[in-house]
Image (tube, rainbow, N blue to C red; front, side, top):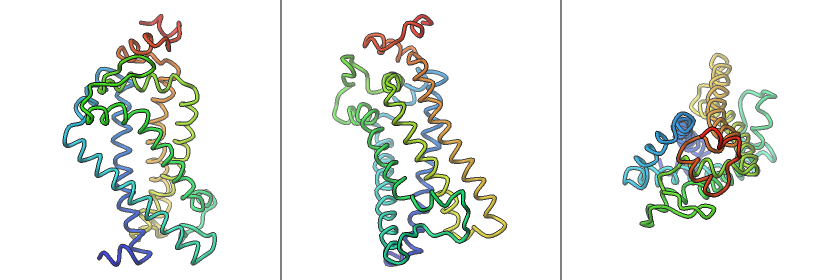
Length: 252
């Protein structure tokens, strides 16, 4: 089995499919959790506290990191193999469709953008939340203000009060949409479901899943940019850091 997964093209694609499926499920969970921040900053912070640096969250994080590394490494290996075997043709598909051709040929580039965005996300949030708790601290200084490690709403509000962060995240999400849109149906194709009957259905499902994930994440980014003081906890932190606008503060 190990030789099959490491040496055969189908085995590598199977690893990509399984790891990709797990990562998509995580994105759906993460997106759903983030949407809570639009309803209640306190409720979102309760979720952050429930996860935090508890053993089950740490184990899940380590497993997630392993999935990301495995997915990226196998993607790189497949791309190199495809270059050697078929020149510039990558992620070859059995059905050619203009709408997916660009994403299919640029999956590695899109993947790099996704990884860079992930590192940015980790720097903005994970390093100030779970990592801080793992180091034995209760919080960290953000723009001269102490923010508790479980005050995720404040971190969201501060991060997306900066226009350049909003632009970077939206570019990241756009790349992620293309990556997911091709990756989801390609995942099903690997297990043999991309026939004439299922192909259009899988394409539709891919667009629905990809759009649902990206719209959910983007909604939080845009909402907190339009009004950084979306939650009470975030409002207090931002006002102390003089990051609130008068119009937004007037509502609190």
